[in-house]
Amino acid sequence: MTAYIIAQIEVKDPEAYSRYTARTPDVIASFGGRFVVRGGDPEVLEGSLPGSRIVVIAFDDRATAQRFYHSPAYQEILPLRLAASTGVSCIVEGVE
Image (cartoon, rainbow, N blue to C red; front, side, top):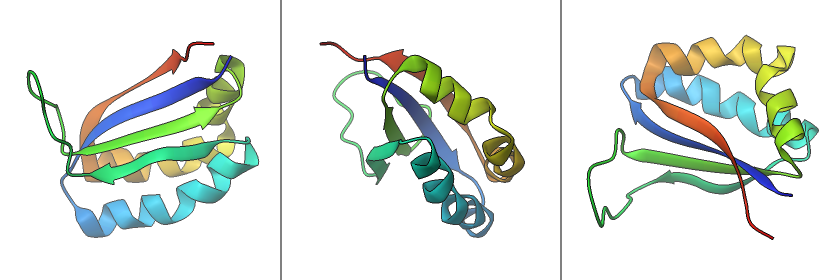
């Protein structure tokens, strides 16, 4: 079942964050992942978002999404995002 990594991000340092976003596509692709949403300008219908940028990445299944997130390649670049932004992220399975 398709699984998604969903992140809601508030970028604090755009220049530093761009160093992170420049490196993520290749790592994501190496796990068969693809961006579904990568960016911003969300229209909030209810409540409030913890950030202005929303990212949704699709993977074949939860195990692959977990392997991507915990991979040495992603863990190497994750500190770039953590230093340049705040937010939340999760893995959630889709529906069939």
